[in-house]
Image (cartoon, rainbow, N blue to C red; front, side):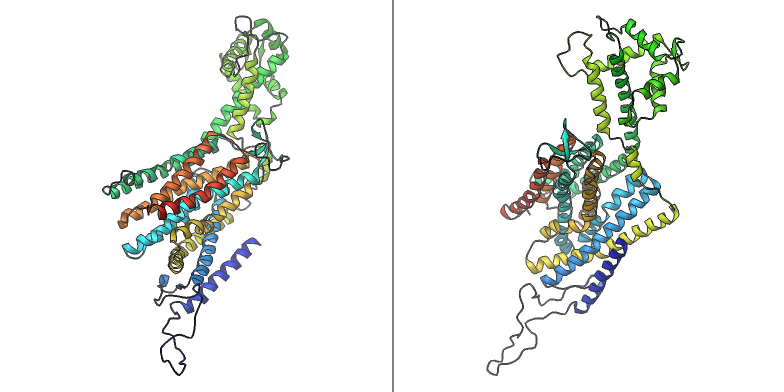
Length: 579
């Protein structure tokens, strides 16, 4: 139903464009036919239009020789709306096709290379065409559209969209952790918010690092030097491409790294839970006055676990111990947990654990637990409060890594019934999105430039405010909808998507922009725009990498960064003449 609706709107938009072509290049001027009053025979026109609808006497240039164009403000506003909607459709088709490919092929090359690149494709297209056609002087004028889009996309994603995701995804905070699907405190600025996993913090850190090419290309301006600017563009381009390759490789191997970290965290949590379980059941203290394992207490525990009373613990007996602890909260694979515990204890490698091996293994675990002691109130080795601290720390570490294999999440994922048909559909959606983006990027840039000329509004501000909604709205809407699930996993995926989109802007789109500037010999003169990108990316990157829980009040800081960015660019460009 939605697909048919989008298709109908697409046909309407394209039909409107071709209707408009009949008026392209034909304008009412002051030399239009006039009616004489019988007294004065001057050639005054009888038609006087509102400035919004007046046009210059010069004819506009039709893109591709047949696309509609006009020099009136109202006409160009209409074209911007239509072209913008078509770019929105291109982004939607690319997103839908990418998700289908991901469902078929899974993460790795698709998730690491294809999805980030396809998500940034509409922005990259607009940036490319903004300085590709026309003379060098024309390209220098139009390239501000590309920079406006680049800065506007970054600022919109990290301010208004970021803050909105906090508002719609907020849950009650308990012990500084958001409780899934529990939102009873309303708009409590401190008591409600969202929590993410540690991988989301890594994504924010990577995003902050991705601004390095902006600093490099801006270095001559920082030194107030007029020489070496072309070289700085080349160095920044090489650095940007290198970061793009590194980021894609990280995306390819990140699922494997995440699984390894998660498996290790689960194993540590099993250790801590066993220690806590033994401490609770022990008729005495687990360690003696010298801080060594208490053999008398541990032998009673050993015998209680040894169901066969044969002096050794077998795999079924260890399994019974682990199953009895009911470790449901970490979605434990029992076979894997038993194998790892057996490996920790069974130094003789005979698939059995005797009493001495049990004592040595518990001793190693207790030594590891002492490293997690968080309080100074522990008196003597017998207190063993560090066992509780160890358990809490390992549980928190597991939660931060984000376990994505819960049964409720698996039930939400639908399998692909017909892989061949789905693959064809995905490829067609990707082709359609790419063709629409490539076909209408150049006309959209021309319409922005003509609207700017007709209204005297700088094209940068038009592209900064308007174009990001066309090229990033699909991504933004999906992120907001996903955040409304009010779960840590959905919040983690939402903010990782936002940080990833900005990172691709900073490496892929910037690489296209720098290549364009270098190849065409354009002047890099975007100090205010670069400053805004640096401020927003570094502030939000540090903020996102230093914490995993964001109370509701943090959303208002993000919202305030958007008008701050606009005002800063305006003041620097028109108050201090930076541009």
